[in-house]
Image (cartoon, rainbow, N blue to C red):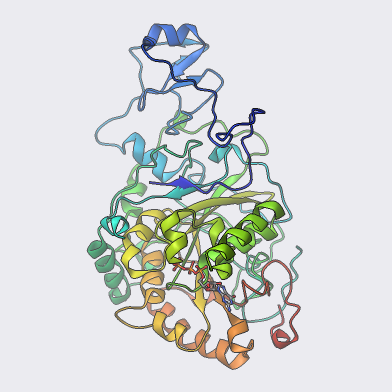
Length: 480
Ligand SMILES: Nc1nc2c(ncn2[C@@H]2O[C@H](COP(=O)(O)OP(=O)(O)OP(=O)(O)O)[C@@H](O)[C@H]2O)c(=O)[nH]1
């Protein structure tokens, strides 16, 4: 179940109390009679057919669960006979929420990415900041401008990444809102991913895709890599996700065609949602990278960052300051380990990028599966340090392998490999090339095409190759 990461907006209601973050103006009174349906209709609200929340008449979808308002409810009138036509042989309302409504614009044009961007939330995902996925998995109960040139990778979000999407992920405005996701047991996830790599079948032969390359500048989508990290998201395109015979849910989704009224009217200028999973072995720096990007792109203010730095230092975990923006729970912060999928977003001119920061620890693979399933694209974060990359590639314990397999099984066929912590290996080209060679072979066995993988050497801690070209001379061999 997703939970928003609370960064960016301070819900100060003007009263100097301790509850500014949560004060929605609802004073609890005892013995207050529940308003009847008729009462709510008169008040200019409509009641959600799923969760029964009384929404303001102006809302086109439920503020709590995201279910669309039935077209039969209009102009303040309510036709009781015509409630939402959910049938048992079609996905439930929860499926609609979890599948997402915005990403379902499968034929939508791909647009150029620009991260200089706005802080305004898109209509697609609620007005708050972010969500954090709290899986019900049992384990969680335990204790700028891009001008890429080179042929390697890119500054992290930039060129050459074509995103295919068939799913979405609608984050409701309320933290408590349930974002129902299918619960996938660990064993299932593992067997699916294992089968994936052993199938040896080409995804394209199994699931012909409608893939529409609509990069506005018409630039090539061939990979090899160019630019810094953010510049590699600029050329993303949206189409149908590429699947595989073992694809977890592509088939079931493909069979179902939502009716027209189920899609909210897309306001002019509204953004298309793109779900970006951040995955990788434990401690590879996923949260630090995500936090750094949020900060660099203006989603975390300087003031908030100071707060995280101060608090993390006080707990003797100064190096986790950026990760704290994503890892919010006391336990996650104390252990320095992400346990649930943190969800936040970045807005570009065209896309509302929902960032799904996944846990890397093997105990939390079920959480990763639950939270990252709707991914349209992924950043696979690698720890370049000696021994750490090797640990992630370990056949039985390495989550680099497992996450790559899982992401592919979710239908994601384009990834950015963020070779992080390059500072720890003196930005060595040899180390980068070795990682690229070994991991590249494995990714190929998972049915990732070379042309769909972008490689970027970077350092989240030293802010190298994230949103601008690297300044450290030791990375001069990289021509991003
Ligand atoms: N030297 C160096 N350390 C880094 C870098 N990025 C992250 N780290 C450190 O790596 C440690 C783990 O970082 P996290 O961001 O928590 O890693 P994670 O992948 O999110 O961890 P899990 O979600 O628990 O798997 C922290 O001490 C970070 O400071 C980097 O670029 N260079």
